[in-house]
Length: 203
Length: 203
DNA sequence: AGTGAACTGGACTCGTAGTACAGTAACGAG
DNA sequence: CTCGTTACTGTACTACGAGTCCAGTTCACT
Image (cartoon, rainbow over all chains, first blue to last red; front, side, top):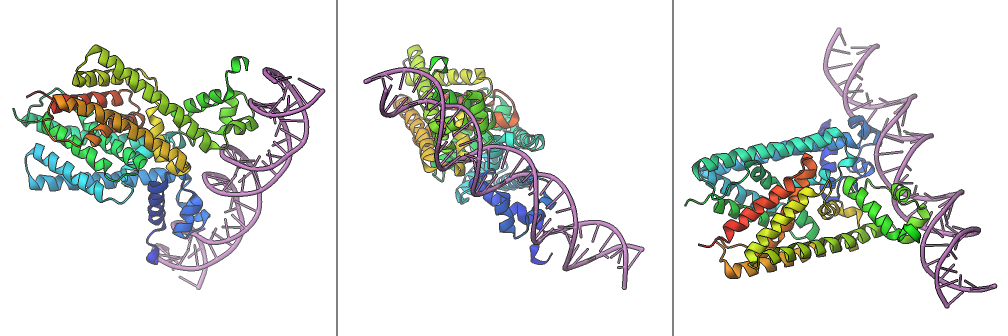
């Protein structure tokens, strides 16, 4: 093993970097094995095919992303115990984090696979689906907690509001990629934050 | 010519349908020529390569999309001359339209190319960029018009607010694709509509 | 009758995914 | 010390899609 520290992880690291930069299809196995300094045979020893690689990448990414949200909102909760203010602080932290990320926020991975789903098998698609449903549940829970204290100024579908967090991030990342600007995603999150301030404003 | 009604357009129709369903990369030239009942040589007579096809598709799509927004908000203006209400009506019409669309709203095309941009040349990427900048300008103009009458409850960046229309649509379509639900995009637009109602609410 | 646009069809190159399998180095269990 | 397993290397092969080249054909229009 030595400094090779688990070849499988090294493959995933290199693949993820390349996929975030260029997309899944544009990332060749040739390129991955060159980067990881292994043979093609070695790659296929760890991953049956590119689909298995995609699945493993998604699994790892979703875990990281969930942990990131856990930490972010735990930190926000430390700063303010009120659920609304906790959410507002968490979103600000998220926006700042996105701004500091050089090029590719992993969020891309979800949208990226969503738009190339015919390239993937059912396992990958289902993983993608469950990740988004998980975020829906997470944020819906937080919004419901807020709504118990601050009555919403307008009736909103709480599932849809939960989805809006993911949607605004994904949409912002699409804009950012297409426009080649660098802070669209964080700006979109800040606008969404303003939305929440208006929606849950005390009367 | 006869019923063949311009081979080039037929290629674009078939390619667009396939790309919306499966993504650009998953759409083979083989499949396009089979659908259009032409030879491979015929395809390359019209399009130098897949990039040229992508560019032509994007050009056509952007034109259609712009016309769609023109018509939609012209219709909304007929129904109510006030810029805020015109916007609210327009968004409702847009949400309804998205719900009625079977599987693939063309909006996909923008996000799709954004996430596979290494597959495309600079011309395609620039086209994509200009389209989004065009929508930014369109909606920013409308929001400024609204803001002149209804002072915003919170200060917002008008460029970002303009982008949010595209972002919410694109983000909603990503969710819709990944979740395999059918009304996420329209729900997200309706939430955004609520945002505008709160933001520009008379005091 | 002649020209050019819009093709057909076939042969070829190249890059990438994926298969198959034989061989090997390292290591822990018996 | 050997045996088996894990983690590979390396080579050779198939299949497929993109893209090139080009010679020949059909048809409309001048």
